[in-house]
Length: 147
Image 1 (spheres, rainbow, N blue to C red):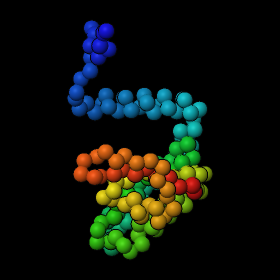
Image 2 (cartoon, rainbow, N blue to C red):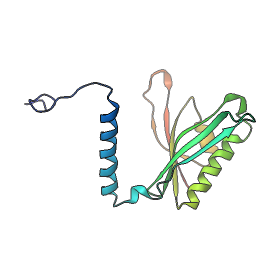
Image 3 (cartoon, rainbow, N blue to C red):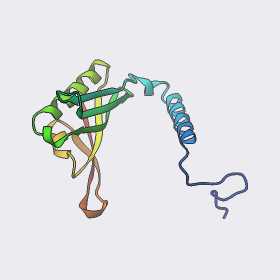
Image 4 (cartoon, rainbow, N blue to C red):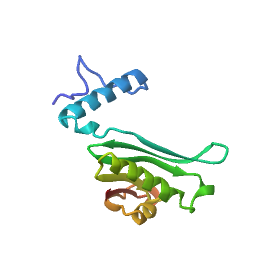
């Protein structure tokens, strides 16, 4: 049997090449856009909210994408000094509110056991999947919420 990774025309290489990385990502994006009949771009708005201290320094933020009328929470962090003061709740509620105003009906994210699964549950998110095979008992949770 021929190994598809070894032939005279193509080869697999391990390298860091930013231009080609962006080209592959762009091609995937355009394929997905075509296959979803444009739904991928609806509403297609980034929702990036920052928590700033009085000097203007970013001490937290939530960074989200919207596609297929869904909010995806990609990155969400607050400096330890400012946690447990309601800022996380305010940030996520504001991101969800903006998403709803853009037509989103669902929100989803993932988090690890050492991060914030309980926070998301308190905010109405439900676990729909887990990966529990990481070393040292680390678990990854996949969560969703109807908006």
